[in-house]
Length: 421
Image (cartoon, rainbow, N blue to C red):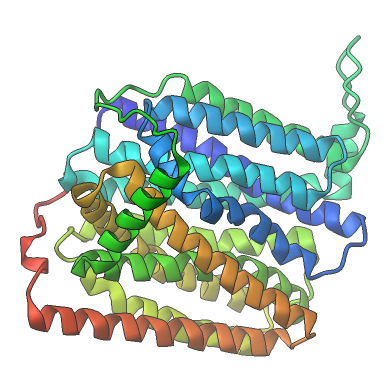
């Protein structure tokens, strides 16, 4: 990989690290306010709504200037959202602003891969980006969970800069200050992201034109035989992954008797599995073999059902690593295939914006359903069962659709089957 790739990865890592630490700090802030428990999954809803509402515009924005500059601007918006929470804005409103920055950041961070690297390196590059994103989730929830622990917070608050009055007096303010430093680190790396030399399209001022162009791209990707399969899988994966974050916290509190700080660490355990799966997929799966991993998605949904019978942490940890591992192994090749088809059909930024639109509608729907189940006071064991069966059932239907497509015409044979290294 060229050196610039590692700069891109570092920028992505610190930005994602801050996003995930901020989620735990926001949950803690809601609990401090004695907000209703169903507000917690709403954090994800408020975060992702920008991805859906602005989908027609962020792809065009990402393709209108060098991707490094887009990432720098977007990271600045995230810093504003973090600052709003620091100065007393409601966690839901502040996290929505962070989501606005993330929506603009995403087409740039993924789009630059297709501009900067040859197609044969896309699976391994996605392995890197998913592995590091998952590493950021692990460290992010660990940092967030550690910062809200009373003993740790007490030590950090006891530290004072000489002469300077920081104004950081509470556990929440201290946690948010650390998160802000992580966003600033990401911004520093953004400054050194290389220009890929790709021609940029001037940003059209007419919103009607942008919406029409986005609808055309959306239709194009869903009609493509390979695009629709990879888009369906990644759409389901991200909706399920976002919901699983909250299910794991609730399940570990109910089944294992853990508090928020320790429960958030178990989110990190799932992420360890995803990282292992992502690295394995990057090593062994070529673009042509990418479709073969779909049955692992069916298996993952069924294995989730085992959570209902686990009440000891020593059994919970390997189970969650296995669930994460299967997820990582099937999503990385699907992501690479989707980027490959999108880049060919419409260009990097537009393709990622279409992907984000679908994935985040899935997140809104699935976290919304989880919100309703929590509001109805449904047992977490019922929630886990419905979640696992839903994921397996949909993955089975996607696989049947692919088999039907292949019976009409073999599109897989045209994909690159060369090694990544």
